[in-house]
Image (tube, rainbow, N blue to C red; front, side):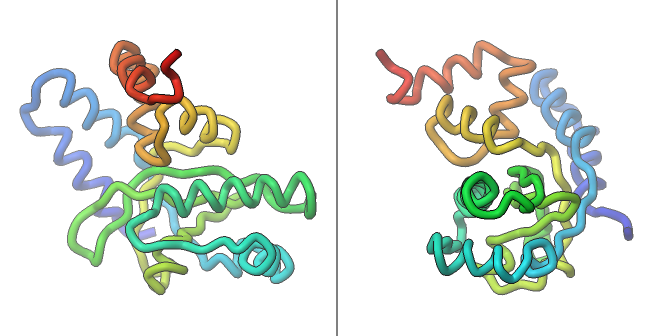
Length: 185
């Protein structure tokens, strides 16, 4: 794999003179990021699995909704594995970065299917050839952990940030949970 400019940029960002907490966050991103290559969804799923996902469940992707698109796909594949096709590979929700139009890294969510990565947003909503895009993964969450984090935070994305806070800044993670109206008693 060629040089991953996303990781280079994260390392450069981490080298700046930030306040200690901000510097620790950027260093963690640079340390966690690892290059990955996405494949087309048809290379990760069988035709029958794709038929089930897109026709039977009505799965649709939307532009600017990468967190939701990825989370929805993980949930549907987990349901499919439990009720329809036990041969579906283990699927994980992934957050990291993608290179947006070759200009700059953006925070982005995609999916790991077995040992392969797919990007439903770039492929299905933006009609881009994901094999030509540049990615870096920072965190991979199994469906149950993803759902737990979503319930605790009340939102789809930024689960990597939340995971970091749970481990390194529990007081901030508690504030996020407290802001979620579903967690109020």
